[in-house]
Length: 565
Image 1 (cartoon, rainbow, N blue to C red):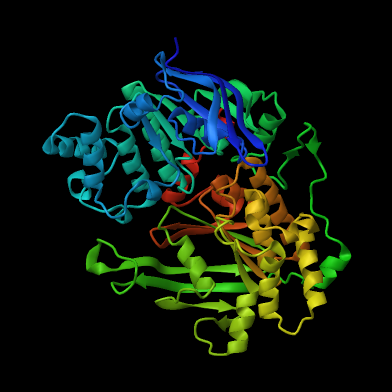
Image 2 (image 1 turned 180 degrees about the vertical axis):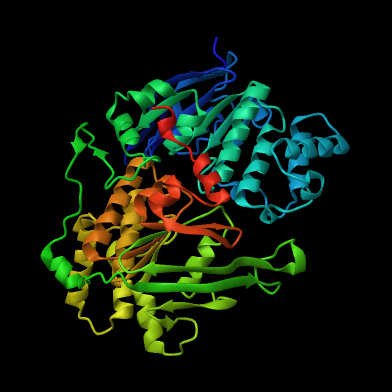
């Protein structure tokens, strides 16, 4: 008898128009001491399976058939048993720790309440156990930090607190749904190592849901690949990744950014199984002419010079450190040349997003200057120059859904910046420009009359790119543009950005914690830590011969699918 046994699990969502099958005939087992990975495209049913195990399928969804047994006891559709098991028997680690923690309560209160709810302990005993748990998950000075609120912790530290909550009542099974998304590589390594150590130490069963194939390769014993609610591959991690038999498996493996070399383009697999060889974007001459693509001069486009940014006590940013201020950037300098792709990497809180906000004029530097075409951006009072600058620098955000107005059709979303920056254009010209832009990002013109919620994550990101291109920018800032996408969709978006840069002569600032992606996308890379610039170097030189110890650590800790294949 297996520790966890799932048999013939079928889950459907019953709507007025149709029945949507979320999972069909799902079967797998998990033993104590094992880590099972579940991967697949967005919407493949990964999280649905996890939610089914703890009976969190929201109406109109329901489990129509199947069995879920833990140590021989039936859990499927047995709410009474599952209520007792949640927290005590089964621990859950969600993707976003911020939403898992109550911002109004101290960490102490949330841990103590959970422990007292499930274990027969008094307050003092529960508090002592809470401190022990924080120590176990690697939070230093636990007796002091337990008095803090969630917002006083970094993303990685909050995830550690969530894991402490998940193991607080000594569960036998932990389900972790995208536990490392949006975490930098060093924190990601710590979280995954923590889960591996806990699995071994406590003899747990662990299920990790992720789109990161490197995480799967280095963390799991077995892996499930899902597509449209069906398991298309299931077996040992090594067997599945080294010799995938399904088209979905081949697509996921072939789309992974390599960590040991730079490639010109990502390979893609069609649903029918054949490799897509001609997957490059080929813009028509008319589009390129209408765009007004520029000849690349290789001259300095942006000069980020001796920038220091301090958020003081009057700001929304607070810190426990000396003098009640946070030095987000400390005398940072770098240059971006026209036509290049420049990468920014570093852990959370290193200053990457602050740099993007300063360049886009959303935040003023405390000291130093930013020059764009030799014009000091934060000192000029010329409104025409400021407006021109804002149009020439555009941004693609991490979450395309939150950055798109849900009440606007796609055509209105793309047309809005055109109307703002080019007020003299006719309605017909604006319409032609919108059509060109949707063509550029590889979507049909029929898409223009639909709303953002009608598209997948990858399609929404294409719409975001089209909107960013609407002002015909010279500098495109990509802030974690693929972190929420599965690996095959990520490959499509990265290929698109490569094509756009080449054919429209764009300059790109690429911000990411994903080192393999950064390696494939950038000509030069700047490494940041705690607001300080560690080094700036050509990409291959940096990866093959890093100089700074922090850079060496980041490269060493990258999850590598090559480690298993």
